[in-house]
Image (cartoon, rainbow, N blue to C red):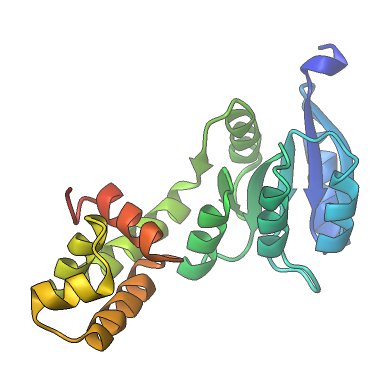
Length: 211
């Protein structure tokens, strides 16, 4: 392949042995080009500011600026690199936070080399890929949180979706504005939402409310 056809990959992992192993592994593929590597979030952000990169293969747990902060900063900068998380961490909170921050792929370090190769090529083509074991945890997390919404919380979420403010919700449900604020806060926490708009979008996507 010509250089222009190759997928430009940057690898970030704070463990030198793991990072070197990944680079060596990826270099066996004719359509991959390693354009850089880093052992910290700070180094990654500095390098990518001047580096043309298609795929960032990123660990989450690092000292200083961690992987999640790197993702958030790159998105704020509108950096074009597509991000694949490659980590040992499979907790629900980590997965949800990374996906909400804008990653296109999520793989655990136990993934096979073929899974890794496939993920890079799929994400490079503009699609998303979450390893099945990770997807299962994500769906369980969303399902469990949705099941925890009470009938009253569903009523509040439905009114939020219709654009109602706290006072209007309070008047319609015959409760105080303080109680409305409490319900909204609980809804955001249960759905893992950043704000009211985010909560409504999650509710619509998951089919728990309808406009």
